[in-house]
Image (tube, rainbow, N blue to C red; front, side):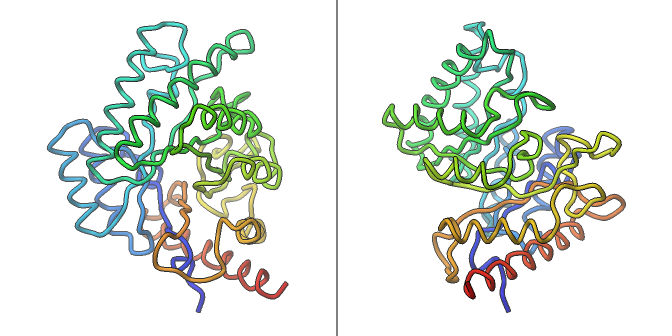
Amino acid sequence: MIDIRNFVQLGISSILLYPKALKNSLSLFTAIEESCHLEHFEVIESYLPHEKDIRSEAIKTIKETGRTIHYNSPLPFQLDGPYSCGSSNAEYRKNSFKLIKQHIEYAAEADAPLFVLTGCIDKGEEERAARLSYLEDFICYASEEAVQHGIKMVLEPIERHQFKKIVLGPTEDCVSMAKRVMGRNIKNFGLMLDVMHLPLMEETFDHALENILETGLDHVHMGDCVTDPSSSYYGHTHPPFGIQKGTFNQQDYSYQFFKFLECGYLSSTPSVENKPTISIEAQAYPGVSPRTSSIVFYEKLNSAFADALVKFKNQ
């Protein structure tokens, strides 16, 4: 019987599955702790609390349960505020450097192998070139800090023209940024693909994957989105898989896995070590517990992957 976990390090977003995680540090700890006991996932995606005692307990739980954390940048980096690395305010940019260094140190405490970065807020065409330049400096600084701890930095493309309005939304622009960063002799930086964001960026899966492969694919987020404004899940909400009016169905996910196999991101041979990473970003189903929802997520993706693997081997 095919099990995706023999081919992939399967992860799940604690913050999205347990929405109360954003309430305070104790709620974040609870979300991390509960995620560590979801039997189908060996990786959790989250950031860690600032408070040292709470953070230490979270890291202890992660390690004792044999889980790995992929560190996710917290929200302040995406906002037009005092931690914006793309701001024209030099003090704000300085703040962003201090804060990212702090979170990289937290990631190092937890032995995180991967750190997911996002771009800063976009402020329109007039400011875009300056913001991209500031962001490039920020990425290089963060990567140089992270490499000391053996951490790989990956950039997540997020929609520019709507919803989050992050400066690096078009995949081509993310690839261009990656080439500039790598041209500055940064060895531990790469790109990831987030399936959920693609319809919001008005890009196809094939288009995004083809572009990202120019510099290399280093991580994947899988999920769904709703582009119908009449739905409560409209936009950047990370709905559960298979929700009404969702963009992707099982055949779509199977196709995505097939393309990951075809391009070599995934191997058709089971492995114990050095497996590629794919994480789920999704809310729990309405009226359904996070644990039960996570089981459904696993079953859906496992079925889609099994179909893709059979097709790939039989082609």
